[in-house]
Length: 306
Ligand SMILES: [Zn+2]
Image (cartoon, rainbow, N blue to C red; front, side, top):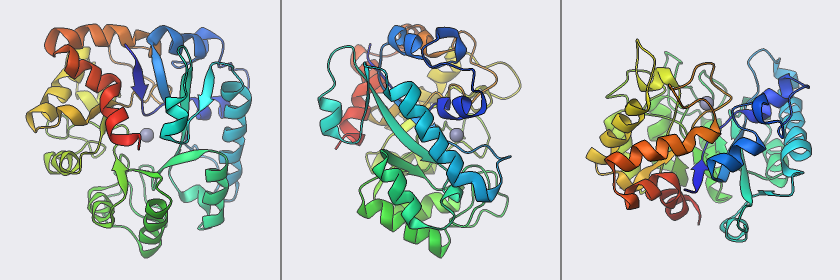
């Protein structure tokens, strides 16, 4: 089964540990051998600047991660940077697409030309915040729960005009609704259902329904504490969250955003990308082949490749 995955944190790992190699299977959850074994067709590589890096060095850190991606990932013959549907359609059998996404815009230092630079380097998806507030808006764990700032609204308008994808996964609820009002190509790359697991990183039913209504996409994430609280998460928990979205009418709006390499704990049995076939097998016991293909890649192709 072809797999499209909307979130992993490999660039951050490569930035923080010089000894890691993308081609050495066991080095990370997502490596080239693991992508091949798992059936990857398209993998997002998030550019997330770790919290300890000071404000003045954060844009430099993003550039350093892009260079890591160029040198270690895109240098591989079978991996191709994807900027458009055309790029994706040109992938040959056995080739894997890579999408660069920015996770948190504080690194832009309020300078739009920094985003233009990242666009020129291949970034095509943008999330405004990580978990906390920045000049553009409040993240999911910011208790203030304010909507977007004027700067944030301007940035969203720019992202919309440029037809980049706007990732709502880390935004707080007020910011989420602001973004929907402003329009554009929104999606949630790695979030689950708050009705089943109460954490501010998950989406309320009203948010899930709004994304379904816009025919957008929700990437089910494998972060154990976003699947189930108080005990280790299992593949059954992933199925519960997918079932819930389906019950709200969203079977054509489900995808995956594993968060591999951004997590310290894993869903039992789902420890790295090459374990995707295990998940697919379980899904095939509960859903039709058409539905499973939808979750794995077709929903993404239909909704976000335009
Ligand atoms: Zn994240």
